[in-house]
Amino acid sequence: MRAQQRQRASAEELAQIERVKAQAYARKETQTANTDAAELVSFVRDHLAERRATFGEHDLIAEALNRGMGKVSLSELEAAIQVDPELVRLDQQKNAIAVLTNQTNLRLEQESVVFVTAGIGSAAAINSSFVPFPELVEADRRWLKVQSNGVTHDYTEQRAAVAGKSHVLLAPTTKAVEALKREIPEGQVQTVEAFLLASQKGAQLQDAVITVDEWGLLSNRSGHALLRIAKEQGALVRFVGDTRQHVAVEAGDFGRTLEQHSNLRSVSISKISRQRDPRIPRRGDGNGVLKNHRRTG
Image (cartoon, rainbow, N blue to C red; front, side, top):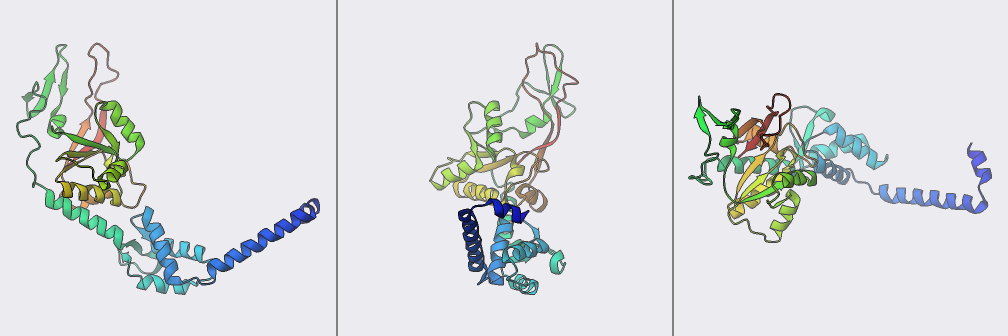
């Protein structure tokens, strides 16, 4: 097959193939001639930690061997991994079985947990005189609304979760922002990254409440940055969503970390109660069940 292909090629085309091959070999020698095991481990470590809060030592070794292109031995890489000061071992496993992270991811998680735990109970009520859903009636520790047509709606969970104050409404993705805008057309909704960028340019929160929807998508970096800004400007933060429904693209599972390691408390809403035209028949049982949807604060 190769001989037939070369027969069909002109002399100029064959010469071009040889030039491309020579250039490729030259680049390979340049890239790998001075390969250092420690530098290679450092590069691959940062590459993995950018998207994953934890990774196996075998992942680090495999990627380093792939990038080293035969210029670094397995023993050299293992030795470099053992002495790398930026790597953190998260279990007692040895060799390639070990689970690793880096110092940056560990620091972001620890600082976020400390900040949230320290802030529990430190702020006054957003509006102590505000009464959500004043038309509701209490019965057997439930807050109910009875409509003129006799249908009763349970707003107990919504009443517990709602608060009144000027808000900064955020969501991690453009799609989530668009969904929020449809629900709250008059609200100023933006992505988390746009908010972080505006804050770097000096935008002021004016003692607002930062509400983040779909917070399960927050990474360690973005979640930590939000908490830092809130602390600097005296703002309050509310996280809304289900940490078991989404995961971050970047490294770290910010929401689960706080739920598991801080004193953060959640208000769970298992039923969706939307505004409906009473003249339009409801489909099914009308419960609109959505389990484990949370507003966390």
